[in-house]
Length: 207
Image: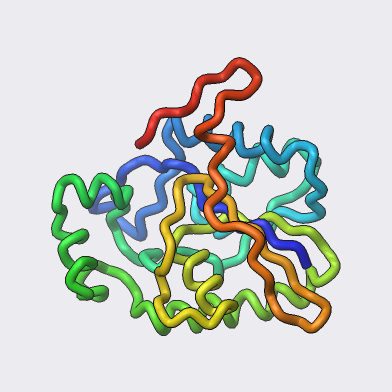
């Protein structure tokens, strides 16, 4: 398997929703998703999967549409905060010193409405193992979340820290299985499609 792990694009802010927060993309987010698809246009991709969250599905749509593929949604690829009624982009929480950000900073995951990181990683790893069995000979693009991707990559590499690297919106990670069954990491957090001018477009602003 060749695996492209992609973080969703920039979503809207949602606070105190009636149920689990499930924002769609902002205008900038839709442009990030379009540029991602254009950047990958010449690459072989056999299958597109996504977390069921709107921000992940909407990010995957330009890539899937470009190739005439259906998006497979995988419940186990949801984010660590999937049950929370509030979704605030992390950089906004940090700038505001929001209460949720303070809870995360202090390791109070449940008070922030998040799952336990170690248990979350176990769940993501189990979901991935079951899903991968059906895609062993394919090149697959999976659109998910920063926490989900960190949890999976840290599991595959045996890294103790569950969340060990930063991932920008539509940041791209490339992994592949070797002949002995191990996972090789080719890259983490590719963002050239966002920051390099191409086809007459200017680099996108930050969130």
